[in-house]
Figure 1: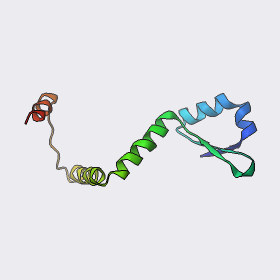
Figure 2: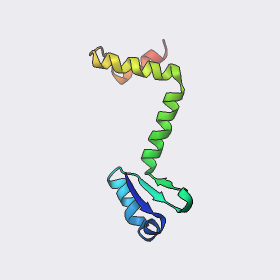
Figure 3: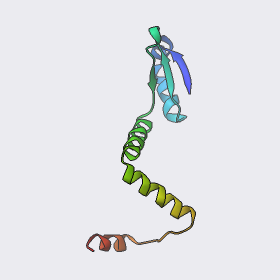
Figure 4: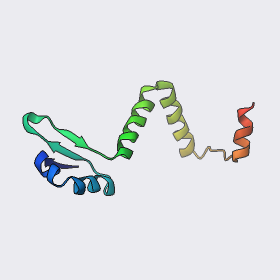
Length: 90
């Protein structure tokens, strides 16, 4: 994570945006009175929102953790798209 003052970011905004996207990095933009902000990519922002949603739904989160454990124990089942679509109607 980088930190840069507001004036430097303003004067070099394009390069900071490119760094955030190209390096999957974040930039803390420091401002007077400690009113700092963070510059992140849209993909990173969407990822944060998705994680927040998953973590806020306890039942969904527990199901996700159980699925992860099943994968780690190699307890997986492979299905074709057609088989999955057929399951919708069951």
